Image (cartoon, rainbow, N blue to C red; front, side, top):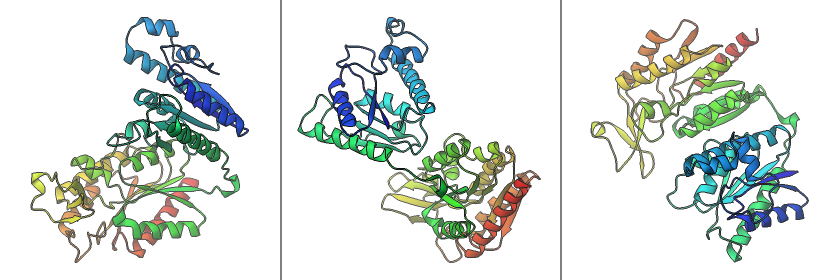
Length: 404
């Protein structure tokens, strides 16, 4: 098995050599890549910085002659991405590991993010700690970030042990094999804590029909990961039961949708159902509540996160977003409207129940959905077994129409 090692060898050569030797010692094959641009490499790379620069479109001397650090770094990132992508397509990459500080982490994880989910990716980093935002490094991929504790400036009692463990981890992960016989048709679903009963019942019903269900949390990143996997052809059907990110996008909440949300299924033409789960509440931190929410019904979801009830107009805006995006797609598509509520707290007798506000969703869908998109009203709550059964029945109808 081949493990790619990314390190700027002028500053991280000692650590890269240690990782390389650990990999060899365990019977794996290392492939050392050097995306550095200045200084003198401490060890010889299997793919040099000169080769990586050329893979990005320019020679290294030409890049350095620009005297533009940001330009050079981006060019080396582009080259590294191209090299790593090629290695993977040629079957020369079973896992990838890197060590670095802020710049090294930005460079290496950019290449890791082009690899599909399931390829082991381990980043030992000085910035995997404290208040550092991990989103730009991890994105939607399964990158394991390990805090180096001490600075990565040579091997010592601390870094030697951590880097050795990280190297062992990437090799162990690369050695995990999932048999092809275990693969079933994949259906993606979105879930929030307040739609869990409905989602889990749909999951149970689909698994009885021999589907495999992949559930994504509606926290913005989860939805984006789902969209990417759909475009990669991994997902064969979507039940977007809980698109909470839409209301947070429209109202500046904590977990907004990212660009491209609710477009992939329509582009790929796979069966798609969209529901209103958890799109009926705005999520804000308790210490930064917008003034317009001060008189709204609310529920403290966690000590910091608070759910505020949406209005008729806000639910109408959610429905407009859904209509606009689903209308633009193709393939078998439907939108459901559970008439007795859209989340745990939005049910008769619960703090966020507001039947009049709920109607904003249904009224707008009826006006704006194209004729080729089905609108199915279900006289049940979104978490009721009846709603789950109706959703599965609808999904099977859509799937059958695509097959036929």
